[in-house]
Length: 238
Ligand SMILES: Nc1ncnc2c1ncn2[C@@H]1O[C@H](COP(=O)(O)OP(=O)(O)O)[C@@H](O)[C@H]1O
Ligand SMILES: [Mg+2]
Image 1 (cartoon, protein in one colour):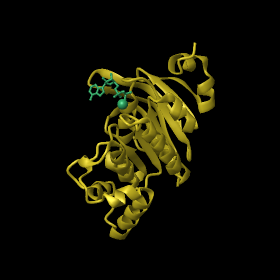
Image 2 (cartoon, protein in one colour):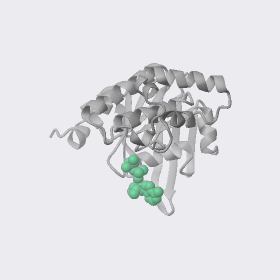
Image 3 (cartoon, protein in one colour):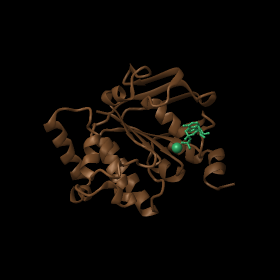
Image 4 (cartoon, protein in one colour):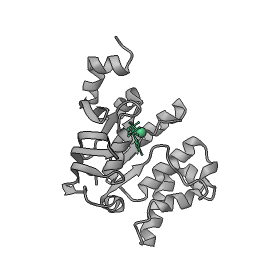
């Protein structure tokens, strides 16, 4: 089932340095919602705040109408949030399969976990072939698969993906984006953080542009693609 994630005017800081200054986003059920913005804009901090890894001092985070703001990160994952972190963060000295199993750590139901594992192996036959290999010895593209597969092991209703294109070749970026679209079509709402504006808008339904911790523009992907300011800032058209 697709989840509905919203943030309402959230504020967060690292010590005294404010990083999110009242960010409101609406990631609609079944949609790919994108968060665009330059390096240092606050995109990863927004994801960390949604997951409960960065405390918010004000505002509200809701998943399907339930307030998440005061829940621990693992409680938020149990409610249906999943995450593919920036830099993928596979556990290098664990095997591919061990990495995948970590993604289901909240479930004690052995059959359920086996079923999900088989589903991930169907999606990524390459991981099935390499399940006993240490994840740290896999290629960048394969580690991307491990990271996405690990997130799918909790069967999230909303998947947060932080800069999946980072460090991948153009061919692998295309592959990852096609995969994200497939995951979305299978019924998972996606919040996609990216700096790669053109390719992101090609697959996203709606987008928010953030700068210095605030939303400075938003619209459907078509609206953003046709926005003169966006064209100037991100498409190199003057
Ligand atoms: N752990 C941290 N401690 C202090 N400042 C941080 C920390 N992480 C990020 N920042 C600062 O917060 C701002 C936003 O960072 P980040 O959310 O990582 O941006 P983005 O993901 O858009 O590149 C930056 O100015 C960054 O230096
Ligand atoms: Mg980031």
